[in-house]
Image (cartoon, rainbow over all chains, first blue to last red; front, side, top):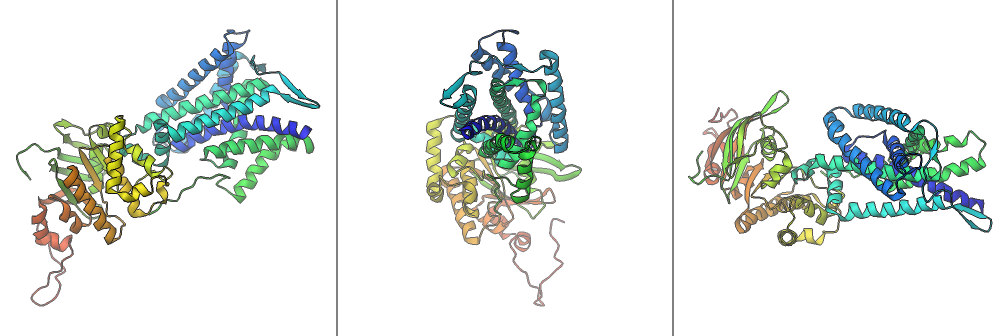
Amino acid sequence: MDILQLIVSGLANGCVYGLIALGFVLIYKATEAVNFAQGDFMMLGAFITLGFTNEHYLGLPFWLSVCLAIAIMGMLGYLLDLIVLRRMFGQSQVAVVILTIALGFVIRFIAGAIWGHEPQSLESPIAGVELRFGGLALGMDEIWVIIITVLLTLLLYFFFARTKLGVAMQASSQNQLAAYYMGIPVKRIHSMIWALSGIVATIAGILFASKGSIDPTAGLLGIKAFAAAVIGGFGSLPGALLGGLIVGLVEPFAARYMPAGYSQIFPYLILIIMLIVRPHGILSQIQTKKV
Amino acid sequence: MKQDNKAPLLKVDNLESFYGPIMAIRGVSLEVNEGQIVTVLGANGAGKTTLLKTISGVMDPEKGTVVLQGSEIQGSAPDAVVNKGVVHVPEGREIFPILTVEENLKMGAYTRSDHAQIAADMELVYDYFPILKERRTQEAGTLSGGQQQMLAIGRGLMTKPSIMLLDEPSLGLSPLLVREIFTIIRRLNHEQNVTMMLVEQNAKVALEVAHYGYVLELGRIVMSGEAKKLQQSKDIQEFYLGAQQETQRGQRRWKQRKTWR
């Protein structure tokens, strides 16, 4: 019985990792930059929602706050690309990496200054309810996290496979030059991808904060999500989710059956084994160009 | 260089483009009239691709003008240039490898929103390239080289261009496929009245389909004329068509000088 419980809570954690990893991969695929502030985006999105909805702050209705937070984070992602990253065009990738790491620090301090450094929990309708079947206790929040992640994944799949804008996003990440030649506004699409990954991060943040508490250092979770993205195959959206689920599932089992202190290293151990055995990740989407 | 007195569809005047400090195009002027195929011949590094990139807005010129239907377009963003009716079919079959053939074609119509017309144009492309219809749900990266070239041309047609810039469609294809593609290029020009600017190293096939030709060397136009006249020209024959002239002594002359040097 407690195996099932471990699986559910592992999957729920994995969904959050997977969504953050998805943000990494979205930006990497489109712009070949790695956004190390992705975890901090998640934290900021959660805190913005918390700031709108918690009684202690504005006390707005939960769903309204979610919509506002998504809109704000989407806008932030878009403007970040428009104002900062577009100017980095032609700089080395290291410059972009350092920029995003620094950005992560800035976001952490700003969040700390506004909402304080104490852990807080989001007053969300899905938090704290438990389902009981006999000896089995499942957190409603964990089930909701899984359901929402599945829905969001389906929505994103539909967006990328079926809508013109989604296909254009794929096209410009597969062959940027050809996208320019076809009149696709590649730069605007990059900004929209940043917006999209800001939105996905916000949803991940809301789910994360509903399951427990959040403080400004929660963004460091991004490192674990980064490992998940590499395990799944950096450059593959389904791979990011899969990597997230693997890391999420391994954690509770390692914590249960391994001596304390060793369980923490498991995600990274998988990462290292993966890099040795299959460096492109599980679901790599490497296409060799025909000449 | 005047061809006739009607205003040309595309007029390039004294264009200069740089790759960093290197001047790749040194004052090129040329004209393309509506309904024509105009070819620009040149060897590796002559500046052919740079010329097309400058026209389509991927590169900005240092000097000179590009006039399309009376308005200057040099230095515009590439998507703006496509909106004005210039499409660049790049060399080396730059397709979207993980999208299907049909999605590739739809991306060609990205700037358009007239759905009925887009569907009609898609059928037109499938008429000219039946193999693409057969493979329409397949990922484009799995097509053969010749099919990818067809897809690149078809995708270009989907933008409904008033002029199509074709960059070396013969590159890396077997002689048979080159013939097939050029037959289709000629048919598109004849039947659909697509104006084309065709950049080629393969002077033989290019001069067969073109109405007018320019020869580009080291960034300069060194010769121009009706395609038929160029085919007759001794220099073109020797340097681009590979004809060998024999002297009275029965030996090949190695140090032939070009008349434009």
